[in-house]
Length: 131
Image (tube, rainbow, N blue to C red):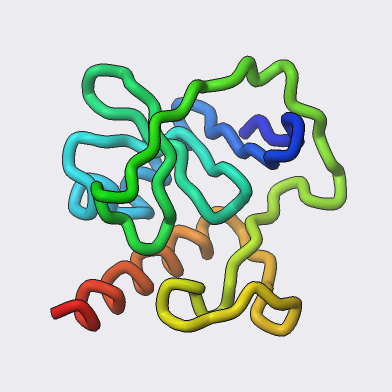
């Protein structure tokens, strides 16, 4: 995993083997067929890639193709590591899309594995609510 600040954005870019495992963990093939996760932008958005190699950002919740936004992959060597954040992913205990607020009381820090479980859970919950 390569991570760090690039201007105003904190990016986490997964290594190939990590990305393969996390694609399974996040259930990307079920939630976003034809895409694979490459990393995270500012913890709230995935960096994903389609089968043609084009990169996009999309909110981690909800994973909905209508929220795709084109993204230019940066040179990972330009990331400025912040040791305080290494290996941590910010998570809103109650995601914003289901009524959470961007406040310290609603914020926690989780591992990539826990993040995958939370993303799966909240995307399933969101889809159930929408039905």
